[in-house]
Image (cartoon, rainbow over all chains, first blue to last red; front, top):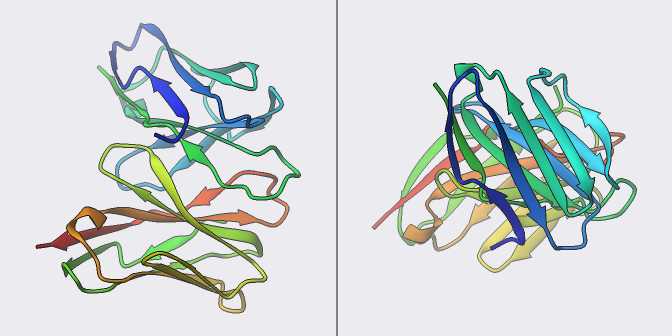
Length: 115
Length: 112
């Protein structure tokens, strides 16, 4: 266990559904991240939050909507997804921008299948 | 692209042998990190080496960094079947804030 918990672990959703992924950390970190991992591709950084403020949006389509209500929780709201969005979605936390040691702690991921 | 590229893409060895994986990157970095991922699960941090360090050890792991060649290597000594996993390098590049850029990984298989 890394101290970062993601739910659900698996999700199957239709293209017209709305669902949310949840991430929670109690490591005292002030930075949280969403990554997408597709087969045979590098991890793609999607969003970065520092102290609850979004500091990076890596040209992610608007059908993915992140929310960070506090430094311990991060959500990814999903709406009108496409089959090509099927992937492993990984949440991570770490020290905030400007601090030393940018080691990331990852959750176990949510395996998303869009049908 | 800032991302690192691991080499080889796949590696199969016998238990007890050493495994060496390489990573190359393109821009100056603050540090470089290695992560391990078991199939379909999250990544686990293994070791971090700063740009002013050349070598670092942690248990059976040895990491080297050559900033002049923009490359790093991860050596796992006396491998075990439980070391079977994918290994990724990640760079914290200069001016990139606190985000990590990952490579495509090396799939290591250690056979009994």
